[in-house]
Amino acid sequence: TQQGDDYQQAYAGYRLAISANILGQRELAISALESAKESLEPLTTSNANADNLALLSSVYGMLIGLDYSNGALYGSKAAKAIEQAKALDPTNPRVPLVQAIAAFNTPETYGGSKQRAVDLSSQAIELYAIPCDNICWGHAEAYTWRGLAKQSLGDAEGAIADWQQALAVEEDYGWAQFLLQQNNQSAQR
Image (cartoon, rainbow, N blue to C red; front, side):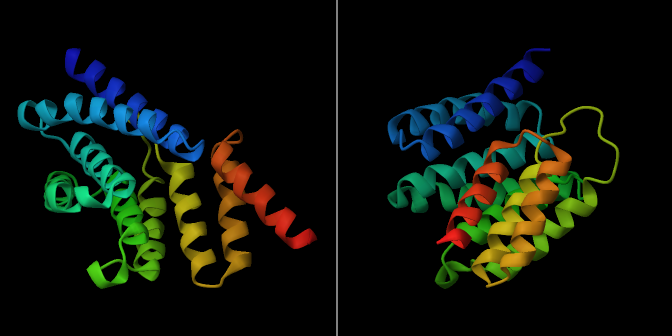
């Protein structure tokens, strides 16, 4: 369907933005996110479902992360989208995953919390146990974000365990591999 194609295209833009950002290609990341946003915004009015809204909320959050001046424009939109997603499907694991990412990246003065990121990632991981047959991304990512939050809270062993679990879920998940390699290099110094 066209709506499914639009979602897939938006998700591809989201993943491209993550990769571009990691590689320091800020303009490509912003362009990919703008494209994803342009695909998702009409979908959330014509076909409001938890996946469309959760992904849109995450796209808004990344746009803020790449340019903090976007906070005033996209902050309330991101919050509204994720609340709508949660209301539509409280068992969708991508909803607490996106909330965990937001909690991790939001400064504490604006309501962010690394412990809340751990708790929400854990909730997402529990929901990923429900069999998935349609839109299934994010399981390995939930472990990776929980590991990052644990690392920020001083739990290095817990972080390593989560990144290893991310690889058990998705054996070629590059971000978890990268974090484990980085951790090994730090340990060797």
